Length: 374
Ligand code: G6P
Image (cartoon, rainbow, N blue to C red):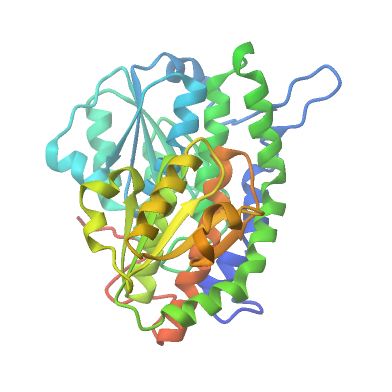
């Protein structure tokens, strides 16, 4: 496997730019286009013997840490929609701190790039003791989590070296979207949605290739933000996870304080921070939450917020009030897959901010790729 930097200066940069290929590998052999009389479908070999049990479970609980947790959060809405099973989220350490309830009737899904994270592994042991069906989603064949779970899916994103996870994040979301399709089965009422998601998955590597063209624009933005103390990222719905993950990327590598904020919570605290100088990224791509995000932008604008709005191509005029904000236009995809596209400019921003600020982008201060102690 190719683990040198090739034409790139850093692993993180290489891993961001290879996402069209890593996503293709993740989907290879798993998506069926359907023929004249065959429906489009998904084949996940590692799950097929357990789908009935998963469909009948009382709930699906996603468990992970850091970026892996954020990926599960991004996939949650489509999983709820297609499976009809309630989906809850647990940060592994918090589940253990609370000794939170896990039941025999639960499906517990452990998401981990390395498959070795101690908190996630301990949460897995805890869920096994409680009798849940345990599913692993990892990037590492033969890892502890892959070996200890009852069944699972490898994300096949290829080796990730940069401490800040990038290509594993997008592949994890894609795997969980495929998992949602597999669990959803072939109910007639959801057929057109399922087909739209499958078409969207086929086209996703091209859309990611397109959004990567924003590289220079993100470098320019990084130059503008280089000396800032803090950056807020507002998102909601499918892109709440994008806000958390974008902020995590910025803080972990560029060492700038950054916070992902659920836009629906804006009035309950974050609004107090808004002034003319604090930069705020608002994710407002087209989906069912778009008009709510437009209203968030209006309210931030009324308080003279310094806005950077991420919107769908062609929407600049609908989101940018009086031309006073900076806009990042991204290609539009099926709403539940939009987080895969939207995270890319924020990965690029975090990367360029770090390089321009002179920090180590592949090995950020105090952090490890895989945290194997609790
Ligand atoms: C560490 C890494 C993060 C990663 C997290 C979970 O904190 O620095 O990039 O998201 O662990 O790792 P995992 O291998 O379980 O996905």
